[in-house]
Length: 464
Ligand code: HEM
Image 1 (cartoon, rainbow, N blue to C red):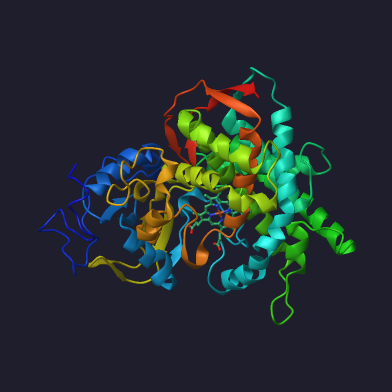
Image 2: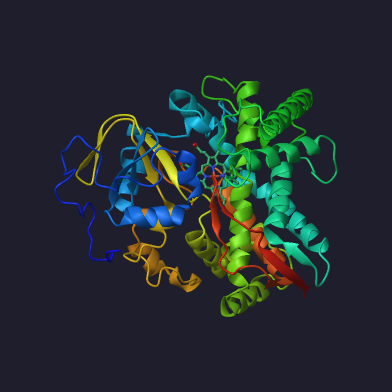
């Protein structure tokens, strides 16, 4: 593979074909072994595939099945797509997956509907609003630790998946998933959504309407979830002002003309948040502890910060700004293991990227997991080194060399919520437990919608 540091944006490694200005896709591989089969493409593993793409430059064209794709591997082009020319692109979902989980929700809506919804929902994620969830985040993290016995072996990814769900259910619906009362439907729906989006499960990549047992289970779970949320909506309508969860806030949200979202829209937002906010956050926690278990010096420095700022107590809102090293640990973990590891956009018109014409209809991919380890921007990019995140480093780093939460108008609306959760849960758990890693330190990663480890991340719990 050619060295990456001697290349400039748009450098064409394949002179003679697809030169700037041509009608074809930007240069890229011909005759990929995966052509014509999207399932295999997704299962082949993203790392190998993108390594191969990167040999062609920073704007790489290829075809998978009947679709034209274009990958951009330079932060300037990521910025162009997400920010500068955001209106020329739309979020892309693989139609053939048929994963229409919440058509009226923020992830899947577009155009005017999306704009209206985003304006209505944004205030619900303001710092002062989400701050009220911090206590329950710490409380649930403590409860999770209490559930572990000293010396026990746990699957960390599963434990954090459960914890992230408990936190979401409390924040979205004021439900305790351990206590029942409608919460079973939330758990089942979250599991069904995860299974649906996970390339390792048998139901993934088959359209919803194919009557496989997994699809039937999925449809049944989503049906029950919708009924449950309808019940919760009704309760909030009967007792306005009694709830401070996101559901209540969204039901009340009005635009300038006094219009609110329909119940269906609000319901689809709940499905969207359950999907977008669950595995992402849980994976960020899993990978942070996976890395910490292998880097004693980082762990010691983290412990020292926790001792100094928290002295054994769970963090409160007032502590969060002082947990600077904790934040760099989280940032560095999401650099190496971005939970949302690649984003997709469809070009709504012909656009030019790096001197190449990218035709209307092309699917542009923006792979965080590649840009985050580009040696043009990161020294020793594969190394876990939270210390790299100094102010000076951040100042000179191109903005879109690091974008775990996306960017531009459609950046993650739950970013502050997620960071609050990560900065609250990580110290709460780290202060009480040491983990000994029992599984592969460098697990294979699967190409689902999020970056999942192929095997459970297993740890032995040692209580402090
Ligand atoms: C570490 C945790 C998280 C990560 C890494 C993450 C990452 C992302 C990324 C990369 C996007 C942009 C996708 C794109 O533009 O194609 C996104 C969008 C979104 N995220 Fe997150 N997310 C996280 C947590 C959350 C949480 C906790 C919630 C809600 C409670 C949430 C809700 C959403 C929604 C609704 C969108 C779509 C926004 C829009 O289109 O306007 N996310 N997220």
